[in-house]
Amino acid sequence: MSAPSKYQPNTARRIPRRNRWGGFAMSPDTAGAWASRLLGEELHPIHDLHTICKVVLNVVRPYRVNFKIIGEVWPAEGQYMLITQSAKFDGYKGMDPSSIPQFEEGELEATARRLLEEQGTSDVMQHFQLGFQWSTSDTTISGVKDYRFITFLRD
Image (cartoon, rainbow, N blue to C red; front, side):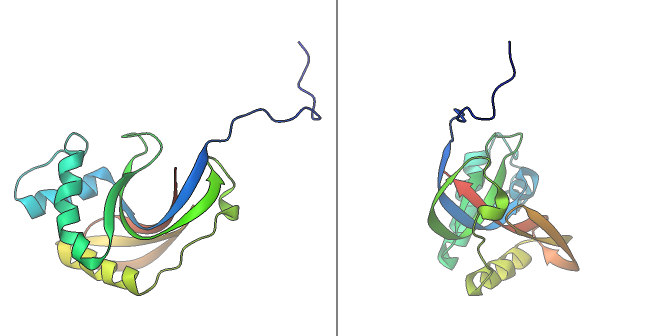
């Protein structure tokens, strides 16, 4: 069997991603702990995912944001996201992150940050992420643990 020629067309199927979401992503453990505090009972971060979404959504909806599960593989790569922005996009899974237009934080994100800070009681490290390039701030605040601003592609 010969090696593939560099002149043959790439026949790999591109899986489309038609939407971009911007907002604050958090781990299942963080979202589960937040929803558990709000509900007043212990929720499992993976098994109670629908309850977690409903409980948190009831709190954040008045702030004009959404709360959903994101990630290609749940629960291995899954996260929850407090969605503050969305836009149509003509992209595909696995595309070069540098070619994905990034959302910028604005007034709604400032409101969402205040909401996250008010909703928790533990000291946390804030992370800000533009797309897939990490940068970390050394600011320690009080609030929901381990969230970061990201741009996420959705089908």
